[in-house]
Image (tube, rainbow, N blue to C red; front, top):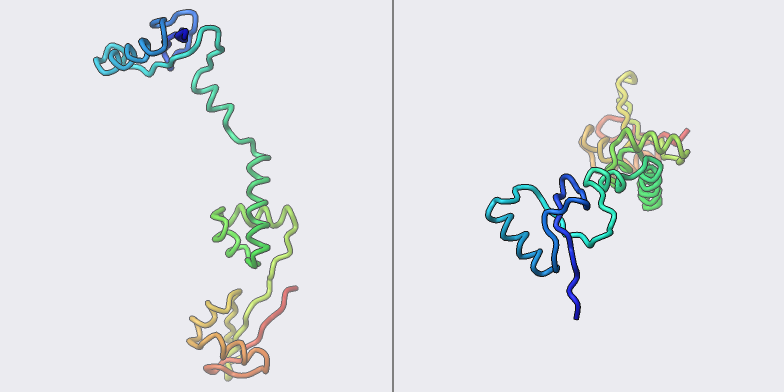
Length: 172
């Protein structure tokens, strides 16, 4: 069984023409460990086979960077998947996908996703100028202090809940 010959090179300044050491792999591994622990080589080192093309870490990391088109494809894919799961507002899509609200807004506009732009409206019984409007039922419930089922029922029959006329305004 033949041992593999390797070169020990400085990882910060990879130069295969000027190795720090050369020899069989097991011995070079032990030498590397010893020299690193003793402080003789305070820089990171790499073991490479002779004749391999060596790139710097910066070049390697640059090659792994995601291009903007690929990132956008993955983002819109995640947004569409969350949309199919029933998240029909920008805020819910942003929460579900962990993508920023502004980014989701841009993607929804760019790819023309039809959102549910309807909202819940509560108008004060004796003061028509006092109107409360929210996109989600839960936020309206908190504001007027009424349970969801009574607000839903009132919206279907133009009823009054806690002094407010409730209505559901459909998507435009």
